[in-house]
Amino acid sequence: MSARKLVVFDVDGTLIDSQDHILAAMAAGFAGAGHPLPPREAILSIVGLSLPQAVARLVPDLSKDDQVRITDGYKSAFGTLRAQSHSPLFPGASVALADLAARPDVRLGIATGKSRRGLTHVLAAHGLSGAFATTQVADDHPSKPDPAMLHAALAETGTAPERAVMIGDTVFDIEMARAAGVAAIGVGWGYHPAANLAAAGAAAVIGTFAELGVALDGLWGTA
Image 1 (tube, helix red, strand yellow):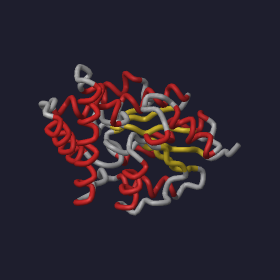
Image 2: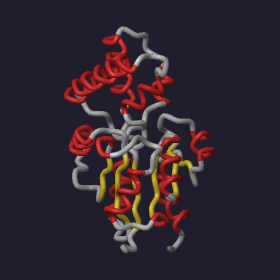
Image 3: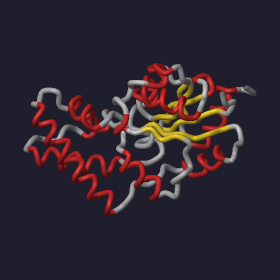
């Protein structure tokens, strides 16, 4: 088994600030289905789940058919928005990824509620294609917080759970990591409050990407 460490990142709310696209696509999905749009805070609270599960949690009282119409409308609108512009990386993300990639003892991974197509677009848009040793997406796994994505990432890279860390902005990321036996670091700039990440079991919650290296070293020590 490899002795290298694995740092797995969520995407939306962690690496990229996609809330404008998410909110606009959700507005289009609800309008197309003829239902009022839920509050912004409610929409952002379900970011990180796979889309069907996110919509079901957002509007549990609507029929399955209505949820499907909202989901389909969201996908269509998001695809249009994505073709027009790409969501920006959060400040410091590119530097943090480059610093970690330069460490011979570290591999990078992704575990996201995005589709494979969506993730491929994001990575290409930011020059990150090929930067990650493992990329796990909603197409292939149950929604977070099910640990399947992390189990697959560990297996694909031959990494022991104790040598892996999940970086994410939602309690779904933290709960997924705990279910997989992996440590988690929360980020305070995303879509769930920092206090919620800590309560969910994050080993640390950082306020900027500049703090990530120190937080990782604090977890791993000299191991």
